[in-house]
Image (cartoon, rainbow, N blue to C red; front, top):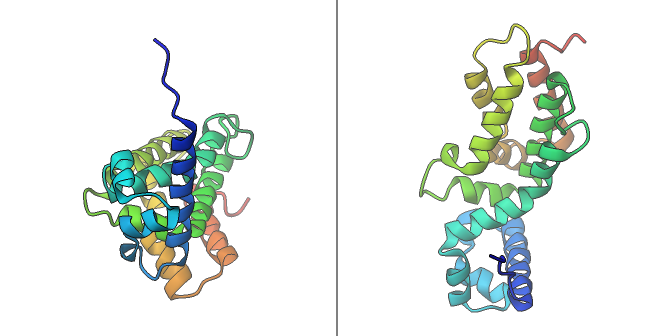
Length: 195
């Protein structure tokens, strides 16, 4: 059975929707202010097209988030160091957390919108489960580290979109300062801060 390829106009339409949503989330005051009607208008498509393609606003946000996160996922699954699978855990864990933090900084309102969808907990999303499983597996390989499951949750909590927004948006911390603080916290937790 051959897989059906999407029509060219459907691919262009999806790209236009993602570009419009990116732009709207990037400049919004609050992610709640971005509606399906806003995205449809900015993308030049009908609202019904969005609902057919994504089901609802949450479906659109999840699809856009997954598309934007794909390069990081690919680097983690198949890429070279420091994110790729050949990298030792003590190097890979901080690199992974830094990549997630940078993604959240670059996509703050989109990440907030996903975490605030209200339909379920951010901890039940596919991407969170994937990051948690990977971190837990890597942390299991760190000698002397107890409770890799909770530690993985605690490390991921440091990259939650609402915390990133609070620190970068409300408190005005610079990107590099946030990255340095996360790196320092991770190094202390992993016992590599003296190295």
